Amino acid sequence: MTDLNAVFQRFLTTPLDDLLGGQDVKPEEKLLALFRRCAAEVPAYRQFLAERGVSPEQVVDYAEYSRLPLMSKQDYMRAYPLAQRCFGGSLVGADRVAVSSGSTGQPTFWPRSAADELDVALRFEQVFKDSFAADRRTTLAVVCFALGNWVGGLFTTSCCWHLARKGYPIMVATPGNNKAEIFRVVRELAPQFEQTVLLGYPPFIKDVIDAGSAEGIVWSDFNPKLVFAGEVFSEEWRALVGERIGAERAEFDSASLYGTADGGVLGNETPLSIAIRRWLAGHPDEARAWFGESRLPTLVQYDPASRFFEVEADTLVVSGENSVPLVRYHIADKGGVIPYRQIWERLRAAGIESVTDLGLPSDFKPRELPFVFVFGRADFTVSYYGANIYPENVTVGLEQPELTGWLTGKFVLQVRENVAGDSELHVAVEVLPDVDPEHVDAGRVAESIKVQLLRLNSEFAHYTPVERQTPKVTLQRFADPEYFPAGVKHRYTRK
Image (cartoon, rainbow, N blue to C red; front, side, top):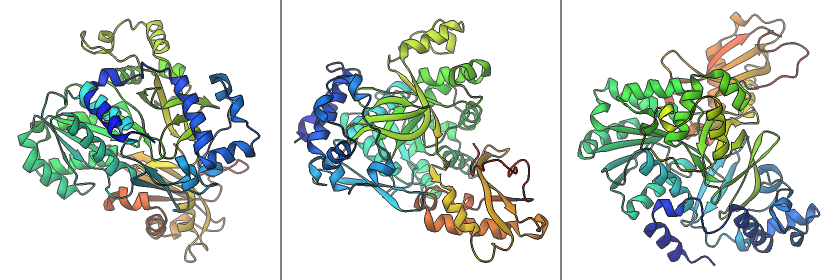
């Protein structure tokens, strides 16, 4: 049984520098210890291994560990009862729970203990200390994620509370994704602090900034900082938002977290990773050489002693300790891993010799942690205001009796930015062969999709602002060559 008092005391009394990297134990040794504990104490994992003919006694080194079968949501999380996936086959010891929506709206529950949050709190501590200097500046942290059972809001709040308890001069306000409450908190409290941090999904934070400016809030008065999660965004978007809040140093005024409901926060942007990404944004040929695509992924650093990444077929696999422990869990995110030394080899090959060449101060000391890059979900979901939008949800909206006489049921789902930099949910919908798109009411189709998204997808209902919930629907002729080419396997989403 974990000594919770000792775990908390270590977090509260140990400097961040000494907590990062797990210097006392190599990551591979921690992985093997986690595996042995799971094989002995987690009934579902024992059964999972037995059904695949794996004998735990044969896993004696990392080479054997790396050949263990992958967990997935489908064949592990949904295949075994929740309690059986926990240590001891019981929920005892897990004192809180988060919920994520499944592809049909069926929720998945992720129990955890307060002690499980401390690894994640370190990711917040990295951002608040290394990027925002919140260890020596009074800071108002405004949590703008949706509150409730969904993972973002309360997890973020709890981690910020842990930092305050550790001695950071932070006050945590929790208006959630209620803009009126956010503005009230900012007007009343922000003037009393040296800086204000807004934490939320990127498109929602931009909505807050724009709407606040329209209501007379001068963001630059409050030395604002931004913490994002849940979306991949461009460096042009970061620059646009930074300009609107009066930010002067992009590498130190914002940071994105890479997190999932099942694994917590797995990595975080650092001033170094942002500087590298900004450089790559200006050198698209280098970016394509690095990542194999013309789009930029999220680039973060991670602590392998906390969350350990592997790559299988260009998708990420993660291991880490939770109330529901993850042992080679396939999180279906397209991405990869770059060791710290290798990233500097790539930079030097391109003529970057030091942090100053990336625009960072000469006295900046980067943490020598590895990097993970993430393009987003490798399946057919799209991410919109932090909610995973599934094609299955949209399909139901198009299958309503009043629409089936007009539509084939095929569509393409996409999130785009409009000219103002706001995220919009777009759905291109195919009409039947003998139907003229102009004779179909696109607004009626959009409303039907919205109704079903609200009904089926709790993340969409609680994360997405009301004014952004109605999708932009365009009606396309049957077999339109851009969206629905004949003879080609159809893809329901487009990145």
